[in-house]
Image 1 (spheres, one colour):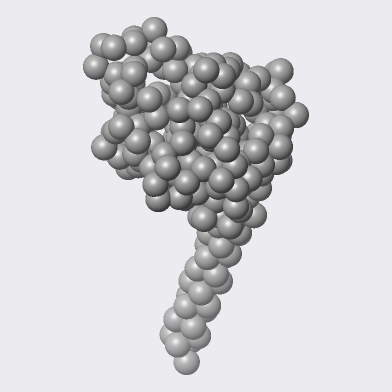
Image 2: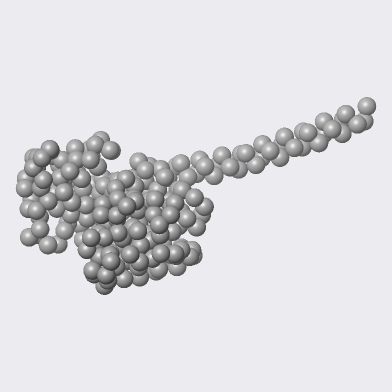
Length: 239
């Protein structure tokens, strides 16, 4: 009779251990689902010490819930690299989260493609705004449809609402390839490297030797942020 009791005891111990392991995994997943970000608020404020009030850390974390794969794909190093890559490009586009609207107002009327949506907010209403300076009426339409905000008729919401402005940037990062061949998210979470994020955001102007100073600035910011997050940069930094 002792042998069955021994087996039963071992099985009970295994089940308890398995349950504990499962609980730990589920707890970690739940923490991520609650909006956990690999960049802390303190680190964010150190990266952007003079950021405008529109660009709040809380707004970014809330916006991330609409794109749960962002900075939550792959191992810890991959997640940190994607966060650093996104924020490095953001920093370059906005002068350290200082600029909200595109600075060259002469360009503002050029971002209206009449068909198929028209430009109901006005010819000059679809200029670059927000963390990645998203422009064009069709981008505002597509992004707004994704997270149920009418940005085609009200594009200025991207300059007034913190969550909306971060969602607009994350929409591009997660779903658009621009002049590149992959989304910036794919480049950092799957394959491609930081250089491909540059290509997808502004590759027609900065890649293949056309404007290396701008490209180098993005890379420098990426190196700085990965260092702050204690993670390597990975390969293929340039485009």
